[in-house]
Length: 187
Image 1 (cartoon, one colour):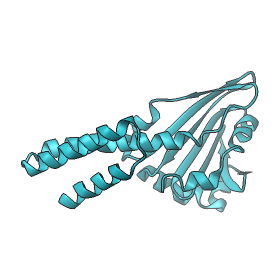
Image 2 (image 1 turned 45 degrees about the horizontal axis):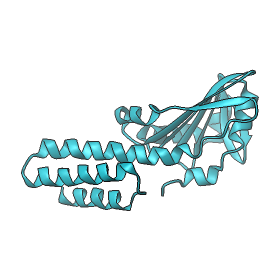
Image 3 (image 1 turned 180 degrees about the horizontal axis):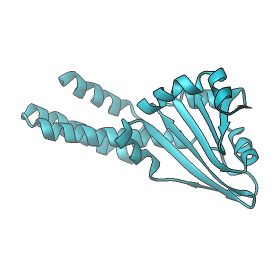
Image 4 (image 1 turned 180 degrees about the vertical axis):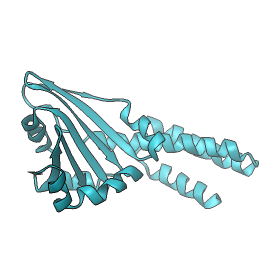
């Protein structure tokens, strides 16, 4: 258990400096103090809080990969996508909604989440993808196009989902993404 606290503390100290960094360090220090006082439940609560803050910090990095709005489109970044992952095993998420005269759509990234790993079998197999819908190539990456949605697994750890219409606008926006950098972000 002590190793876990030390690892979390080291992770927090190596994280990029932001306003959250002090809160992360404080939560980890409080977790260690609670553990040393035999207050295991309090220690777990502090670790959960520190984990949430670290996931939010990582999600901020993930947001930088969301495509910019093209001419005639507006983009609104969601503040709630990272928080929802706590109920699904953790990880990071970023989401943006795009609106234009031709329609609207949403782009969602989910990284380092156990549910993403479950999708790897489907989105990592081009034959299976072709059986489920149409394969769309965007900057060398295979996306499953089915039911008004584009889905891909990048770097074995980042799930991209774009849903809405028109499909052509979703593709044009996703063409701006550096998938190599996205697949290795925060590593």
